[in-house]
Length: 278
Image 1 (cartoon, rainbow, N blue to C red):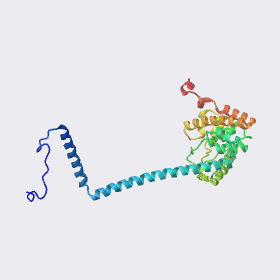
Image 2: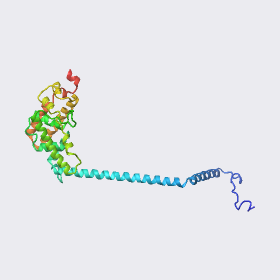
Image 3: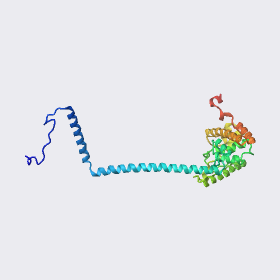
Image 4: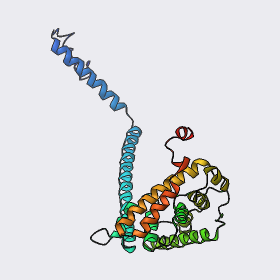
């Protein structure tokens, strides 16, 4: 019999052959069968598939490492930018190693435009000798970031306004030199080009009392662009007025107050066009 069975006795089924009637035994047999099927599936997985799974896990691990390294690089870049900007603030005497200086306090107030350039020109006295109406025209250059004319080389026809605009470009060039020396990533010519003179004559005419329909004839830009510029100009003048209080420049404060009164009128500052028309 041993030879007939090839040296292996057949397994007896405890339910069919031994007639063991137990619900627990049935559950155990079902679990055993499920486990054996699972083992068969695992055994059928080829070596190539296993290598692919290992390669997939390795790629996931590399991706996570790259993401972590990128995050660290970003933090390093931001830290370097912060260090360079601190160097700029110290170089321009806005802060020192211990506190924010009065010049820095002024820069914090001027949020409507380039606070560094405005602060430099304010402390250099660039606005002190200007009449209120002309002051409005000069300040408009800080609020027009994109050229409103097809001709990018357009300049004011008024020689006096052209001189003021050149003063802004000269001051902007000096600030750009400091930024570049402190390793701030900017292009000098692009920085200077941020300040446009397109609406200087328009703003001057409005400050002198011209009608809105009349100032529109001086430019080919949209009405909304003119309105937005003059409304932002009034906000910038208010901030400069507050800055003058910090540095106790009473004469310039009075000129700025008059400048605000010159432009804050008419349809541009109407609460509603319908109410204004009525």
